[in-house]
Each structure stands twice: as C-alpha cells, then as structure tokens.
Length: 257
Image (cartoon, rainbow, N blue to C red; front, side, top):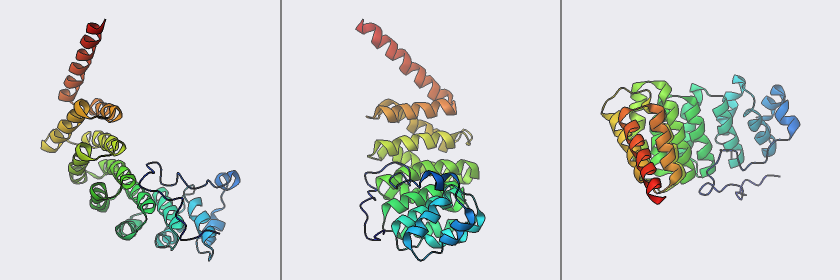
C-alpha cells in the first residue's frame, strides 16, 4: 500500500534531477509493452497504486484519450499520483492541460509535484506558461527553479513576445540564484532564446549577463555553460571575450613554465 502521508521519497530541496528520478521504475515488461486500454481503465481505479501505475504508463505512451483523466489526477490526494500525472502530461502535451497545470502549480504544497508540473508546462510550449514559469524561477525551491529555468528555453518556439518575456527573469536568476545548477540551466536557456532574437537591448542584456558569468561566477560548471551558450549564439562580442580569455590562459601557462 502507498500511504498518502508518506513523503519520505519526496525531498524536493535536495533533489535536482528529473521529475520521476526517485520513483521506483516500472518492471521491464510494463515499460516495454504497456496496454493502453488497460492503463486507460486504471486511471479511474479506486486504488491509489493502480492510478499511479496507470499515470506512469502514459509517461511512455502517447494517447490523447488519457489527457482528461491525467488532468483530473493532478488533484489526486496522493502526491505520487499527482507527480506521475504531471509528468505524463508533459509526455502528452495539450493546450487543454495548461490551465489545470498552472492552477495546480499555484496551490500544490509538494515541491516534488511542482517540479513535475513546471517540466510539463515547458513541454506544452504555450504562451500561458511564461508567467507561472518565471514566477517559479524567482520564488520556488531550488529543484523547481532548476526545471523552471530549463522549461523557459521551450518558449523559443513561441515567437518574439514569449522570448522577450522569458529573458529578464533568466538573467536575474543567472546572476543571483545561490544554486549553481540553477544558474547553469539559466545560462543554457539564454543561449537557446538568444538565437531567436534580433540584436536589440534585450539580446544585449542577455549577452552581457553571459559574459559576466563566464568571467566571474565562482562555479566552473556555470562558467563553462555560459561559455557554451555564447559559442552557440555566435555573438561577435562574446566570441571576442572568449578568445581574449583563451589567450590570457595561454600566457599564464607559459609564465608558469
């Protein structure tokens, strides 16, 4: 039995990996050949473990018939069912799921569930997701901020307005967030978004922030991710700074010989 109050598997402040990384995997047979008809029926099961197994099956299956049931399971009493439903909706993105996902993000007390929701919102690629994702990036726990940062990169597919709205909170978190993994995801997302922008003030601000972080961040991984984004964008100013830093490293190494 799954105890709805047993949250020992859910440690969202420490867990910065995928939304289902701490859940035990389905056995090999279930993963390889889930029966869509059987899983659809189990989404309405009275027993909590059956609902969870069914929701997780749709993390592997794409079937639009499951979407209304998965939306309903976002408010299930069990957090393991809710996070499974959120992740399944990320695998089965639908415009119909966006508002229910946002509503649950705003009220769910469990950070592990919210982490799954922000991942799903990114996969939905909907302009309505920009505001809740940027709010989560500014205010939520570290595990949720991490996934909100990477989900904002998906806004690159939604056009100029969505990209422009996503960049300022990513710059803010890139400079200020205390968690290196969150800053790294912000750097990566800025690289994705800047490729969709003309050379304007928003673009320039993002490049400035990436250069600053590449030069000054205390974490080497963050510096490398900022550098990778600048290389991906191909901004001349960023490339010039990278070349200058490489030359300085060569000179420093020669002086040590």
